[in-house]
Image (cartoon, rainbow, N blue to C red; front, top):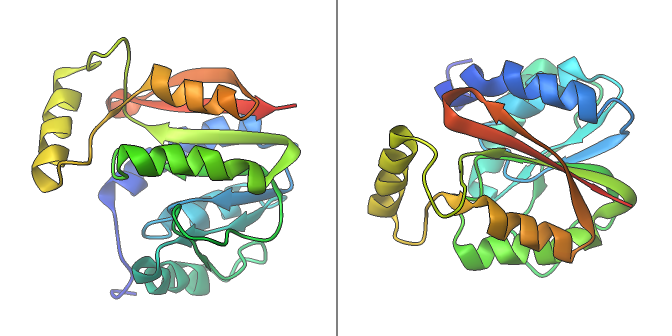
Length: 198
């Protein structure tokens, strides 16, 4: 279907991320994906992890594209995508034992990142895990020249964007009772961060 949105990056990173999810989501039942984007990850991960209900979500302008991917795949474990903006008043009225988000923190403003973590307790089950994929700085420094160039391009698009400091994000997670389980190096100078509750 030519009308489906397509992200080459999502295609490239899906297998390495799935490797992390196979390990950390093996005993999970339901995942809320925040910022599903094109919908490619939702379809690939739901197919690769058939024991999970994979709930895609994003802002309204992305939902048609996500639906196109989900409808074509016709998987039994992908309910219709939810409208979700981290700043909206009402979040999903249920709890998930896993939350996943990829390449979102550097697109959000820092206030929105803070808001995301402040609202997560509303949707996290008592024993939930959180997985976030993307580039991060450590000790206030870029981990590669390519990440520094990427950060500059993000800020040129919108000044509120930028690669986030791992330590600051981890502090938000710890403030809501999440403990870091793993910080795994991924291709193209990205990371997969895994936290657990309980």
